[in-house]
Image (cartoon, rainbow, N blue to C red):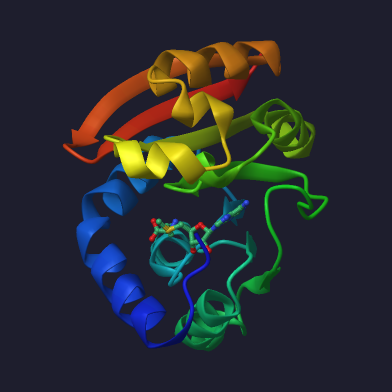
Length: 193
Ligand SMILES: C[S@@+](CC[C@H](N)C(=O)[O-])C[C@H]1O[C@@H](n2cnc3c(N)ncnc32)[C@H](O)[C@@H]1O
């Protein structure tokens, strides 16, 4: 949940390789909008932020992640872009998001760690521009063991995709696209209603 130490470094490396398709898919969902500002919730090693900065020449890239190791890793990866893009990445989580507003907000494989998803989605909704987009990539196949400790009750429910869509509706979003990205990842695109 919060990668740290040597194991965290290996996990981060592996995660970045395994999630490549999800990074590409996320950026593809935003191409038509060409966002100027972007927030990632749970940015890990910073690969998606890097891709978004390079693809969209972002004016403002922001992110929160509770892992000190991930903040350090992403900060190193992104520092070369700081001249042209205003970077605001710091230690934090879904409960305290930067103010925004943002043209795009993404959360890849971090939803299962949000202990109060309704409150978090309301926060996300309040930080999106009226024509903004939320990209949520869910981690599929939560194991029985993980189901005992992951904080998000919707992820533990056994029907995470449907529950996440219902929570998005409750928070004032319309789901406009859904796609299975890989065996491990389900993508959802939502816009403010
Ligand atoms: C499986 S990794 C995914 C990282 C990155 N999004 C990617 O796809 O490469 C999950 C990340 O979520 C972060 N995380 C854990 N709890 C979180 C929370 N409550 N809010 C935001 N991020 C969280 C972890 O520190 C970790 O970096």
